[in-house]
Image 1: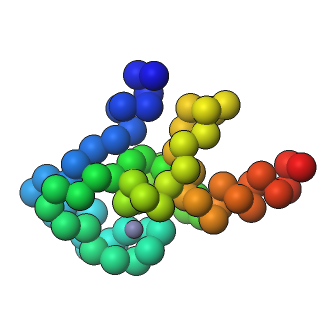
Image 2: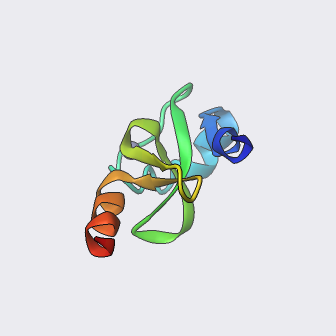
Image 3: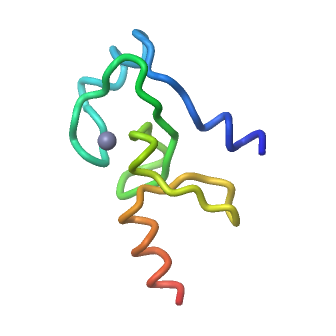
Length: 78
Ligand SMILES: [Zn+2]
């Protein structure tokens, strides 16, 4: 429960400056002020902030995953 909310954030100026040189690793777009983002695992190293609607929350691991990455992961394990 706690880790769930810790992974969520709103884009503020500080995050905008930190994240926008790279943009969102899931869709490649730049972030905008006030957008909801989550720390998610995906086809990249560690956890990165991506748009909330591009992430799936996995209850088993209590973590967010990028949607396509999550589906691939599930297919592999079944
Ligand atoms: Zn995105």
